[in-house]
Length: 111
Image (cartoon, rainbow, N blue to C red):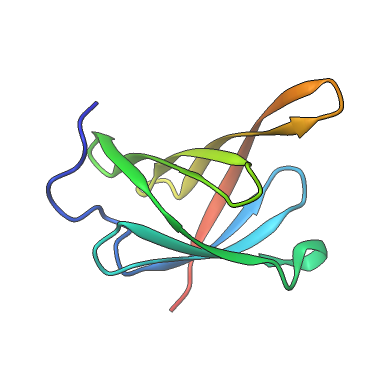
């Protein structure tokens, strides 16, 4: 996979991201698609961060997007903008070492 040269399809857009574990986020992507401001909703309300993105297009309207948060959590998304679905893999430090979780989610464009 190579870094995307053209603007990704999510650039300048905002989505409500619902995860299968009940978590929800408001994800606002910068106009150039290089940054994300995520805001936690529901139980995560009040949490937010502005992060630099690594982006690669893997198919038409399908993007691999990843970032590392200040807490050390790593997040990787495969975003399918045609079907408005996401496959998510995140890792964080647990009691016994690094923990990884695989999730699915949906995107709803915010106008």
